[in-house]
Image 1 (spheres, rainbow, N blue to C red):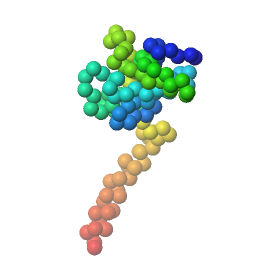
Image 2 (spheres, helix red, strand yellow; image 1 turned 90 degrees about the vertical axis):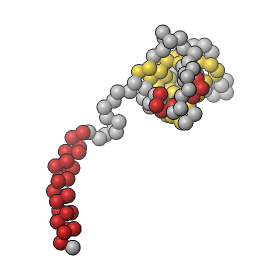
Image 3 (cartoon, helix red, strand yellow; image 1 turned 90 degrees about the horizontal axis):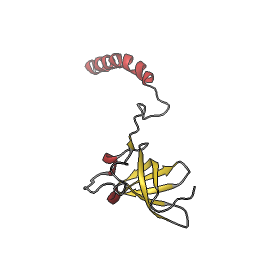
Image 4 (spheres, rainbow, N blue to C red; image 1 turned 30 degrees about the horizontal axis):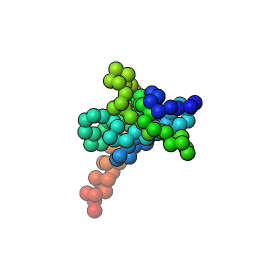
Length: 122
């Protein structure tokens, strides 16, 4: 897809740094949303604004012709068009299920008692 300055896109946040959020777009493009382009108000911490996996609608400010990297803005998107879809995944740890901790939950009281008994006999 050929992007142009001024286009609106929905991107997924892939990483966060103290100064910016980095996004990937459906067509494989990547971009940076600088902290100064998040809001007209002061933003202390970009990670308090949005998280990895969230989707956000942004406006293209510039395109690096050499690699297609997009510099984007949220604050330049009309308030009526802004989209922020929070990643509501219950499991933030892929491959780990809540049931995986049941054995630990059941064994913990026994381990505590054993440790206390050993400490008392020393």
